[in-house]
View 1: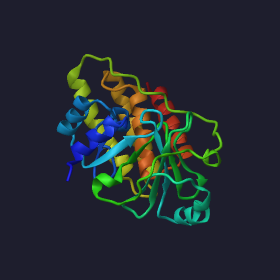
View 2: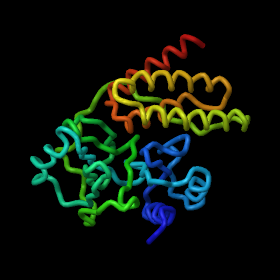
View 3: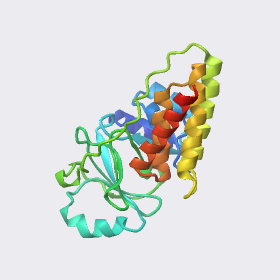
View 4: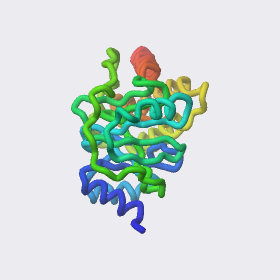
Length: 257
């Protein structure tokens, strides 16, 4: 049986940008899906530094694939049962929670969304990620070729604030960078694992705390916003909640500067 690193390298060879994820489904590397790569040397370094427990795929344009995430919670599987006759045959995985991941060719411009199509139905596309569950031993329900993303599954556009894109780190203080990376990793874990009822408050406090590190040159505001948005999606927050909370934290930090 192939090791998880071998599987990650095989996925990368097929053009899928991968990054290490923990058993709690939170990224193990500080920048989450932003650190995903198809380069074998980079992937081996990620495995050496952080370790692949699960394999995350940076979905969307970066990997050429997107996933329809059917959650095993109220609404998800019911929606799938009512609409499966309209869905084209495509690669399908069972998830650990009993849900489904239907994989499609990425459609240009398709962005990740939570419960926009229907309750329990998420889109993992640009600015998102998805776990490759077969690497954890879960079944491939259909190994067929990837279908095109169906026109009727394109969520309506949502106006609003978008977190600034993460820029490459350009500082020269390696100690500040190492400290900031460790803080970012801890914040991702806290936000991704926050309990219902505490998620918005956790996202706000962790984002505000990380933004203090931008003054030392260890992190950029873009890195903080993108990483926290990703962790909040893992936690189950809806996009409008994520956007509002991050915007509030960024504004509060700018006011305190």
